[in-house]
Image (cartoon, rainbow, N blue to C red; front, side):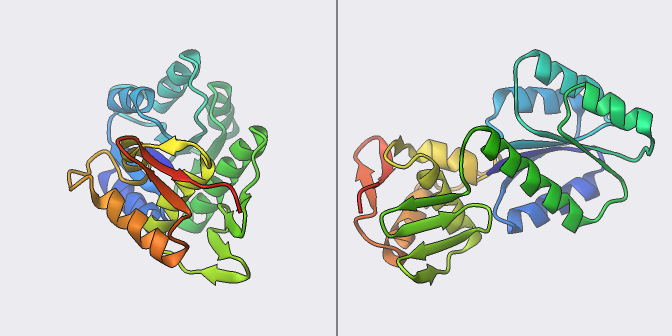
Length: 222
């Protein structure tokens, strides 16, 4: 899953980004309201963490502009303020949840997971995906092949997750890069091939097919 953090407190933003990256998310960070609006409008994000007090445009205006443009991405608002009026205003502009600083990192992660689950349930999706003897629980981040649990790194799981969510479809290398690595990644795009190769070794060689010139497809037959 790909997250955008719009937060002008750079130390806080980078600390959150490091923690969420370790959780297995791809995380982009910007420190200005106008840039946040541009990035959220142009990028493909699963969730936006949006501070209210921002230079350029405040979080209320960013949120309202995204909703007015038809963007339905879940938005978790952060603020140093504390009061019912602030919370009501944030929710009235279209935010999905609200967290007051200072907050517990554990609570933040729990709120993020809850919003992502809620979005999945609303779309009729289940967090558990079963394809033959492969079972992937995207909420618990666990993978089973038959009765055996397969240990994957955070990045390996994220690559597999992109294929599982679109099982039977071709997923391009650029789409995997966009969702698993952040926009600042400037390394070799062939890194995707390395992770797919590792997944084949840990799971089963024929489970992930290469569609030449197009990308990869997770086979859905047993």
